[in-house]
Image: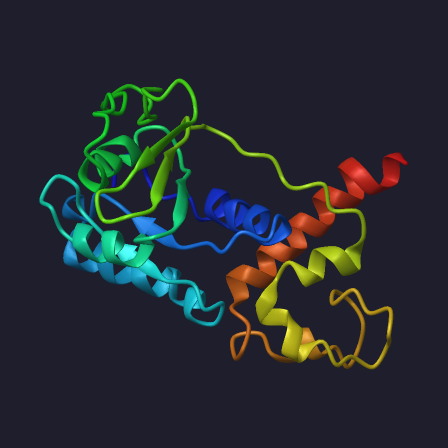
Length: 211
C-alpha cells in the first residue's frame, strides 16, 4: 500500500472523531497493491472496528472496487474525508461527485509520502444527494485537547461496558481487579489498549503535568 497504512495515525483520527462527536467510517484505498496475505493481515489488524460499530470499506479507485458501496452508505449525508497525502482521497471524491474534478497526485518514490494536491477544504454535492468534503492531506495529526484520564478512557467506546473496576479512580494501568485489563484480548483488542497507554503517557508528560 502506497503510502503504507499507519495504524497509529488511524487511531489518532478515531480519537479525534470520538472527541468531536463525529461518526467515523473507515475507507481503505489501494487494496489492489496488497497481496492476499497482506490483505488478510490488514483485515485482522482492523477487526477491532466491529466492536466499535464502525463501518469499513476496502476499495480501489484504480480498479473501481467498492466505490458503489461507499457511495450508497454516505448518500444523503455530509461526509468529510481525511487522511494522509497520497491516500487517494481526491481520486475517490472524483468518483463520488461530478460537480468539480479534483487534482490528483502520486506518492513520492523517495519517501513514500503523498504530495499535497488539495490546498483547501471544499464542499461538493453528490449526484444522489448529500455532500462530500475534500480536505488537505497531512503527514501528522495532533491529539485532541483531552483534560483528564477519565475523559481519555471515555474516548475508547469498547472500554465502556467493562469499566467495572475495584477502585472508582482506576486508570486501568497498574491497579488490581481492573475490568479493562481483565478483558484484554477478549472484549478489548490489545493494540487498542496499547494505544490507550501511549495516549496516557503522552498526555501525562506533554499536557497534564504542565498545568
